[in-house]
Image: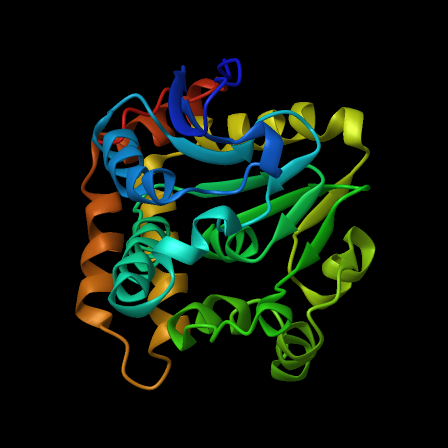
Length: 266
């Protein structure tokens, strides 16, 4: 179950059965992330990965007005000038890397505004579900910020280069339907149905064989990142682990017995 929004800016982790919820809360700034919140992301991802009961990790913003408006601009004078800017960038990059490198499925549930670094975080997730009132933008060009090329890669994995250029060149806001057409989001739901639909998909994923999902995620990520020279030995090993697992035996038994399998991830 998701936690109530804290009064101070915070990134929180809540475990609800097989689902881990990571929630950005900064009520007065559309859930913009402070430096402390950026720093907390790798810790929360690691904790969710280490929990054997967790099958799916969902990122969201507190409430329904915003997923996240990105980095908290109120910190820019002190945190994004001079040498401090390099440290701040390292916090951003560690957060993006933690999500991109997570072995478990990650899903962004996007209500309202998804801007700047918020869109960067969502792009690093495996799946993105948005409500029909959501807006997407990367306004770096309107702030004079150099957008780190390492954070462009996740966008290029979703949208055409020309669309990513338009996103970065104009800084304009795209409505959910436009974002879906570009490939930035997988599916769009009515605002009052977004959480229920997201939970339903997460439940389906959580019931499936974790080792199979892990192997599939690894294959897609590896073949996308290194299409010319993928580590096929590593991918073959992940697939072999599925066939050698107790879950494979359970899947066969469940099929023959006409019942739902009870996968344990081993």
